[in-house]
Image (cartoon, rainbow, N blue to C red; front, side, top):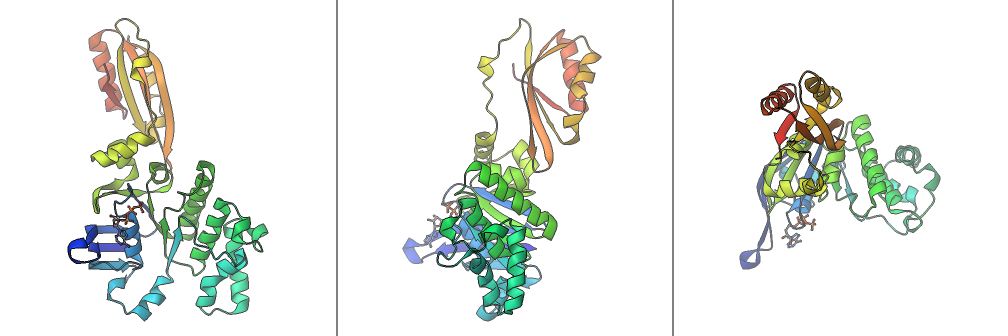
Amino acid sequence: MIELRNISKYYGSGQHAVQAIRNISLQVGQGEIFGVIGHSGAGKSTLLRCVNLLERPTSGSVHVGETELTALTERQLQKQRRKIGIIFQHFNLLSTATVRDNIAFPLKLDKQSKAEIRWRVEELLQLVGLQEHGDKYPAQLSGGQKQRVGIARALANNPDVLLCDEATSALDPQTTQSILSLLQDINEELGITILLITHEMNVIRSICDRVAVMEGGEIVEEGSVLDVFLTPKHAVTQRFVSENADKIDFGAFKRRAGGQLFRIHYSGDETYEPILFETLKASGVSCAILHGTVSRIKHTPYGQLVVELKGEPSEIDRVVAAMNRDGLHAEVIS
Ligand SMILES: Nc1ncnc2c1ncn2[C@@H]1O[C@H](COP(=O)(O)OP(=O)(O)OP(=O)(O)O)[C@@H](O)[C@H]1O
């Protein structure tokens, strides 16, 4: 649905030119939620704005659906842009217009009839859960409600693609989750492809299918969220993941004499299988659980245990090998 081919972007020229994007190629499939994560200045906003040509790449081509946007005239581009909705960190609402008028704005630009606009605005208000607030002004709304207006406005022309520019960065954690759920519902129910940029791993973990990690204008790592989150390879990715992972203070665990510490990871179906219990039952090894979590990466459960195993070393080796064979990932800590 979205394809960026070898795009580079310079701001300015000559000695003072800044290269914000360095030869990036990226593909986002239809119906995917694709996240781009990076620290401030990594080039995320520039990348996102290149997708609808709010920023024109200095070189390379941008394709959305069947159309190469970089080959269009300004007039043709205006028409194609209606198929690409965008929402912003600071909502960008018209402060002097009501919620209804904000949502109606792109429909008026599209010269739709008054009756059509009225009908569509009510439908969108319902979709984003703002039926009661249509006559209010943005200043009378909470941050989460303002972003719902932004989403309704972005969806007004039935776009194929929704671009989200740090859409939850100005919101508290609870409101963030409600907006992320709304985006996920929109993706699943309307089939809209979503490309979002964020500096929060939590956003990626909650709703994205795939992720690209940006640093210095380049993509340094890309893959399914599950793979990137569970086995991050690049140092930048590892930092993002560790900021979001639950911290374990290994020094705090009281050990029994002769005990050995292991960390056990699990994800997907294995999370709900009694593999640990069954493996231990058949052995002479005892187990104390010192720490445990089950979380979710989008729809996939994953988690980790820290356990202390005690028994004959050869029996412990056998237990660990059996767990690894049966779908857990056990590694010795000490
Ligand atoms: N309009 C501009 N003119 C000149 N330089 C710019 C412009 N916009 C961005 N840059 C520079 O391009 C680089 C990438 O910026 P960009 O805003 O794309 O990064 P970002 O990852 O989105 O950062 P942030 O999260 O802080 O917005 C930075 O070095 C930035 O200073």
